[in-house]
Length: 95
Image (cartoon, rainbow, N blue to C red; front, side):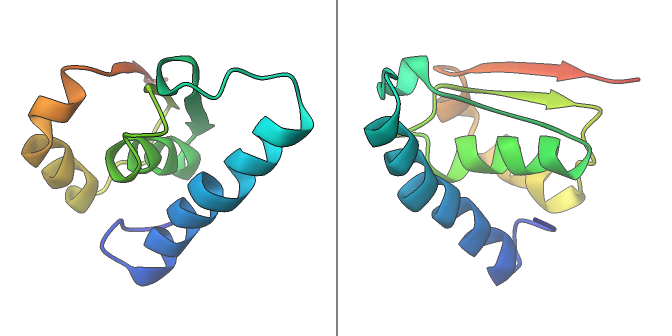
């Protein structure tokens, strides 16, 4: 959580993608394909969801960002990742 340039936010995204997601895929009947895997969160969780999509686009096919608390760094990273995002699904809800 937090600004995506912070090591803690990067560690959080890596933990979810590399530890939690494989655990869920092994314990539950889920389709692990990226186009079937989405992250969802509200407020700072909305930013974390987009961060997961940007940092681990090989594992996530989309993100739902509900009333996200986007900071400048995540918006800059999204701008730089336009080509990746063209292949992904993003839902943003404000309010």
